[in-house]
Image 1 (tube, rainbow, N blue to C red):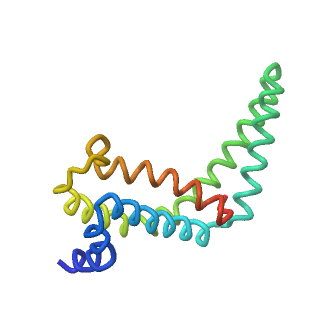
Image 2 (image 1 turned 135 degrees about the vertical axis):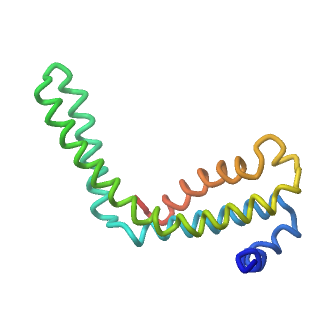
Length: 146
């Protein structure tokens, strides 16, 4: 299959070094890819402003617990901000969905034969997921992605 050839060319060599290294390398590459796609397909300035405004509104909401009318106004504004953020997140999700789906199918067939101590408890997907959380946090901080 053509996709196997492509993914074996891109990532297959890393499996020969060590399966744990392969998962680490693949995670770094895919996380960096998805972070860059997110950064360049979203309006970062608008997202930053909305997140800052949301923090302010959350503080204001906690302060106005006694005023139900004001809380409703704040909730309405927050819903609007959340919908805008959701719309911004759709574009990068659509762009990365198909490549990641194809990559995960390759990973599941490639890593089923490996039973390493690192993968024993979490499996390849659990290991990938944990590393993705860590590297997403790091890349977003380094690249100033909001």
